[in-house]
Amino acid sequence: MNTNPPTAPDLSMMIGGIPLKCPIMTASGTFGYGREYAPYIDLNQLGAVVVKGISLQPAAGNPPPRMVETRGGLLNAIGLQNPGADVFVRDYLPFFRDYQVAVIVNIWGRSLEDYEAVAERLSGVPGIHGLELNISCPNIKEGGMAFGTNPVMTRQVISRVRAKTRLPLIPKLSPNVAAIAEFAKLAEDCGADALSLINSFPAMAVDIETQRPALANVVGGLTGPAIHPIAVRLVWEAAKAVKIPIIAMGGITDAREAIEFFIVGASAVAVGTANFTDPGTALAIASGLEAYLKRKGLSSIRELIGSLQI
Image (cartoon, rainbow, N blue to C red; front, side, top):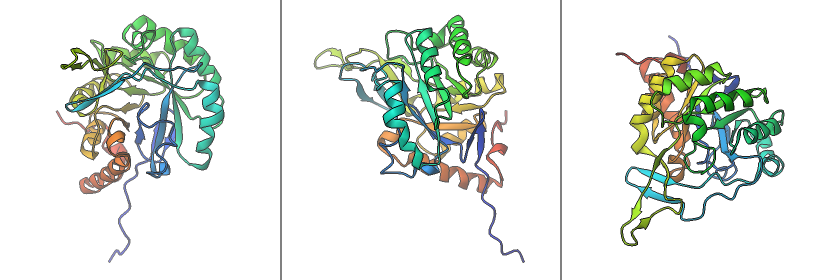
C-alpha cells in the first residue's frame, strides 16, 4: 500500500526567460511598488510582481478625481504617476532584496526616445528581471495607446527598445485594435519575449447631478469583471497567432476566471483590480488553481495551457 502523499501539481513556469514559481502575478498599476502590499500577503508566494509604470523622468499624473467605480468595474485615469527611473532604482527597488520573487518593471514614454532611454537606464540593474513595455495606456495624452494601435508605431517602439536592453521584453498590447492577432505576431517578430494582454478600455462616466464628467481627465481606462469575457476572447485569438508566452489579465477575481485564460492559451495571469478589494486574491487564485489541477488529475500547469476543446 502506497502511503506517500500525492505529489502537488507543478505550478512553475518560464515566461520569456524569467522563471516563476507559480504562474500568478500582479498587474502593473494595481500593486504599487510591492511594498505597499507586503504587510498583507507573502510576496514570496507570487510568481512575479509587476510594479507601477516607470518613465525616465518623474510624472505627476492626472488631476483628481481620477478613479470612479462603475457597475462591474473601475474607471481610472491616474495618468501613470511615478517618481522616475532613477528614484525607483534608488528608493523602491532595494525593497525586493529581502524577497525571492521576480520583479518586472512596467515602462512607458511619451516618445520613442523616452522608451529607449528608460529601457536603457533599467537594463542591467540588479533585481530587475524583465520589462513590460506599456504601449497601450489610454490615460495619457501623449504616446500611450497611440503606440499600441498603430502597427508602424508598434513595430518602431518594440524594435528600438529591443535594441536597448537584454532584459526579457514583454509588450503590453492594447485591446482597442481590430485584429489583436496581427499585433501579437508583429510584437513577436520584433523580438518580444512574451506578451501581456489586455490593457484597459477607454470609457467614461458622468455625474448626473453636476452634469460633468466623473473623471477630471474625462476619459479613463475601464478594468474589472466587466471586461473579462472580452479579455478571454482576445487572449485566445493572440495565443493562436504566436509561439511566445502570454500573460493574461482582465477582470480576474477568482481561480475559475484565471483558469479560463490558461485553457485558451495563456502561460501566466496577472491579477489587477481585484487587489484593491482583496489583497489576498492572487494567492487565493494560486491555491484554487492547484486544487483544480489535482481534481482534474493534471500533474503540471503546462497540461492545462491551450487545452480548449472546440
